Length: 436
Ligand code: GLU
Image (cartoon, rainbow, N blue to C red):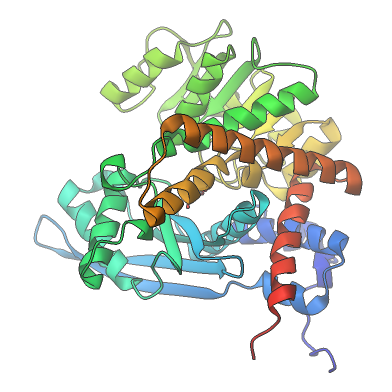
């Protein structure tokens, strides 16, 4: 059979004008850039390459919602199932004004590689609604959640697509999704969603899992550099569910958290911040700004502060070609999805920064989501110690596999992670063959 005439731009992404072609801020292009590199090193056959470059399914729904004022508002919602060859699609739902289809596609692809990298039997998906939840009442938030869930209900299900929390969504939102799905199906289906409240089938340790995973892989990376968490100086960008837990657990292991930031601003104390106290402060004041016992500095300064470990745990594209040359950290642990642009990667590699890429660093969340799904389906629940121990073993195993692949292929840790992940997804496709 002859190859079709139309090829993707520069097979394996060798684009003539890479610098101008690649919009640094386009997350899907950023993902593809790394995927292409891994595909080339794996010598992926051209047909499979085309399959893995394209999302399986992209859903766009209108989400009409009655505001408390009596006005009808219509939001746009997306759900992208990138690849389901290894199992049900798995991935969070975010409510944010910056949500775009390109972003959701990239995030769904990242979920595919992330699940493959930690070797759990899931594909990858992601969803989002373009809205500003900070301006919504509880009732409005519930109506957005339920209507969006109803809009994408055909693809949802424990065997087909399983959402979880992401930016601006939490266990409260997951509970509404579970209820909406269960009402449509006329029976309770807990395993349709993960990150639920523990009282309704959630897993112990799920809320802390992403931050805990960051702590485990940072510990492993520090050990590679002949250091330990004890005494390591850490800066954390983002003080939400990932950043605050990572900071807290690292501090408990003896690390000195020298700087933290959130949307409201950044705090700095070279002697170390009291994270337990800061968590209490944020619970009360809903933001870091105003905390009296540290020097306030700009959010931009946080990324280039003097430290051993930098944990970007907020959002995409924060480490760019502009600030990468000024980063002082020896290790970057990507708690967020896609915080580093492809252009910044090259700069960090030249500087010798040890990057723990997102699909490894923040995989603790989806790993315990997997445990939650297993527990829901088995109807038998584990104690927290068991959850944490199993999480540690999966994170350390994945870290070591990435480290070995880095050496084998002489590539950076991000490309090594993609190599491990893409190889696993490709192997599944080869075994299954193509349904025609
Ligand atoms: N939203 C999280 C992530 O990006 C968790 C996904 C999940 O648990 O399914 O990894």
